[in-house]
Length: 109
Image 1 (cartoon, one colour):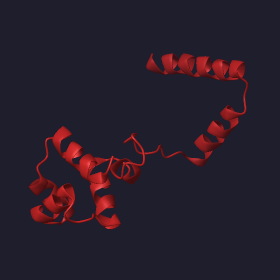
Image 2 (cartoon, one colour):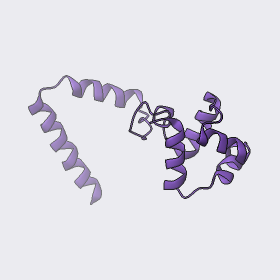
Image 3 (tube, helix red, strand yellow):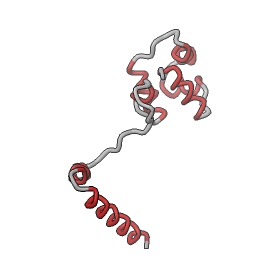
Image 4 (spheres, one colour):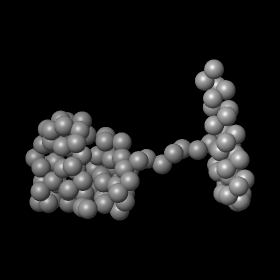
């Protein structure tokens, strides 16, 4: 999917008018209209602003991926945990997940 379609979809899904988006990212409504109709190509700087505004990745907006979610920001310790988890056997992973669920229940009390 091209960014034109994604932009239209994001505007519709979020009930936002082109005029509002233009104002929020410092452009004119006609410029946004030109991007959605294909009369103009959207520069990368604008792609970044639009992606940030909607809280999606540039890859999603550009149609590279269908997942709009921003990547998780992991601390060094969290990254180490993920890397360690990946090398465990399936049984070991299940034990870790059971432990996490148990600790989460304890924290809810």
